[in-house]
Image (cartoon, rainbow, N blue to C red; front, side, top):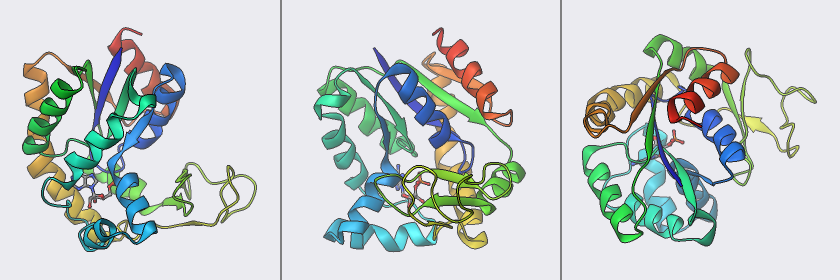
Length: 218
Ligand code: AMP
């Protein structure tokens, strides 16, 4: 069974690589940011509370993310493993994930660390465009990976694509600072547990995927 965590700065390709892994390993990609955005789309209390933090590029505080993750990982399609994209992002959340793993009797098997410089992350995020359909959220890049059928519509579902509200220069700078402060300590934590698989995230998409599968021994 593969219970994976993806770690890397915003723009490191966690979403893209998770999607490819999900197809290869036949286990779901679970992206906490997407689950939050779905709550915003539903205008739920949780969504309304999360939106301000997300627009400013700040982490949504408290236990709410852990609760959403436990609920999602308890669904039948995640029983044979999952790829966690965007959770945990802090040491407290790593503790919560350990509790979730114990509750569900599903220990982590690999933590994939996508190593990407801040400069490259900023380049990627500034040109990123995302499908506005929250059920799709296909990612594009104006320069490296534009849609083929129409310049401003999603190839997969035809919905308009747009810049994410948190891909503005201010929010990007803040998110990267939070990544260095809150998330980077997880790298040493998981290295110490023998779970870290470190790959060069600046290589082309297919090459990064091959590196990941090799590091996992798949
Ligand atoms: P992402 O789509 O992964 O870039 O996440 C978008 C936003 O969702 C983040 O900037 C946070 O506001 C929120 N978010 C995602 N993951 C977490 C997390 N693990 N803890 C708290 N907030 C999160």
